[in-house]
Image (cartoon, rainbow, N blue to C red; front, side, top):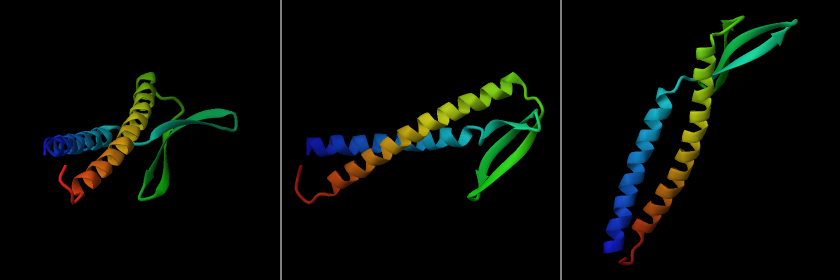
Length: 105
């Protein structure tokens, strides 16, 4: 009764947080900048996946530090959000299982 309402509230909160993390993940710039050495020269490429395929887009011989920093921060945030989403999905699965039970809580 009381516990069940608390679990329902926690489930609703977890679902809300999942939507927020999904939205924040979608806002991040996709891919990451990679520096490649080709015949002794350095070139920058933006690499990402599209429809399950690996894409690489040439960005030039040099990239502004501001852009490098933006992609580095996005990569760190993406890892953080994915870890949080993984934990939330496990929690949601658990809460749904507990609330599905037949016995009165």
